[in-house]
Image (cartoon, one colour):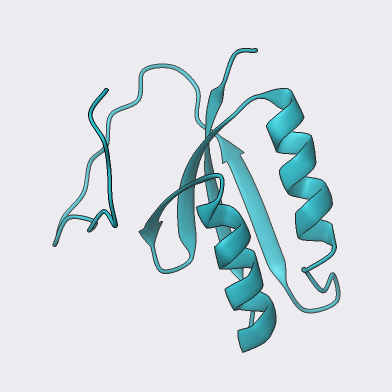
Amino acid sequence: MLKRLYAIAYDIPDDSRRVKLANLLKSYGERVQLSVFECYLDERMLKDLLARAKKIVDLTEDSLRLYPVEGEVRILGLGAPTRLEAFAVV
């Protein structure tokens, strides 16, 4: 299946739910800001992530947004680069 890049951002005031969601997103992609992840997902992975996130997110006070990134991807930014926990060159 074809994978698409998603920028995923969240705003969760509760520490416990925020940590759970961050850990879930780490299993799908890379943290690029405190509350932003970049994830390459196919349709199955996207559905799985959303189903698992629904068990964590409180719809009355939390926000989770997924933005599909289309076309040529260029990363522009200012400031210190994101630190990668670990990576492998294949």
